[in-house]
Image 1 (cartoon, rainbow, N blue to C red):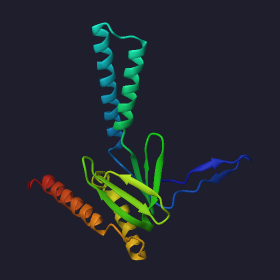
Image 2 (image 1 turned 45 degrees about the vertical axis):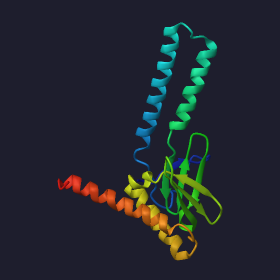
Image 3 (image 1 turned 135 degrees about the vertical axis):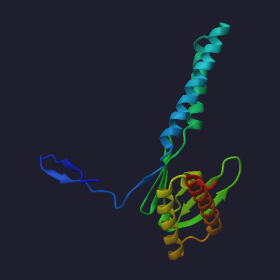
Image 4 (image 1 turned 120 degrees about the horizontal axis):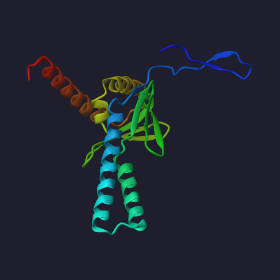
Length: 186
């Protein structure tokens, strides 16, 4: 990455401040967004075609199907997760949250239908992410792991060592499985 320049009001070129380190983004987010758009469009088209086929399509029902398709899209659209030096951000359609990963206070694991990791920093910021984002993005995991080790060294991470060990073990299993698969040993 080269240095970026902008023109000031006087016409001279000034350097724009670069982030203090590399950012890592979810590499599968664009594909998941396309899938959400495709499923939503397919559902919307099927509902309109079905209603038109039965002869019951009118403005009210069309608005109802449009609202339903919009709701399905909002539900299916994944969070855009990125990590940088000391931060992890998760942005949704309308809002986003950022947590300081170098000063985490707790990491909780929320099991259920969809597993979630709830990260809380010492400033009270909270981010909830799907742990598979870290599993499938090695660059994000390395940054996150490095920053959580900083939290442990500083003594701010009081709750969550078990959750981190579970996630590290899962990532190690996935890495080993991938290595065996690529090498033809599986």
